[in-house]
Image (cartoon, rainbow, N blue to C red; front, top):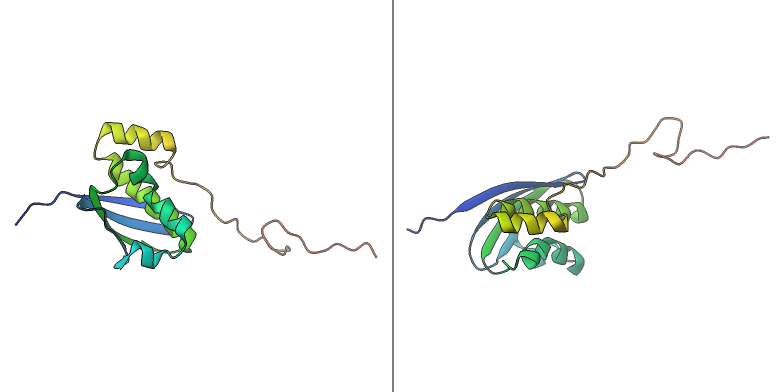
Length: 131
């Protein structure tokens, strides 16, 4: 049996959390036991997930097995990109600097603002009438 080097990483975006396992392989990406193309049906989301591999020229060197939960598809794709980037950063210092320059290692801090009482939403107010 061949010893396989597995790198674990966690990525977050909005309300989504992605637990990523990175192992040497042929470039296959599985998300929640489904192929990437089946899980993310929008091409822009698939492109977003593959960005760390494209920028470091490691497209067919690693297999990814990810477990994603919470949020919507867009947030999950962002969390998956963040997790893959963190895992790739631990493979070498030069890949880490490339990913850092592209901004893939920075966690996007934007969250949904909560609804306030006496208002229609987070910012929107009820209509005010003078008379």
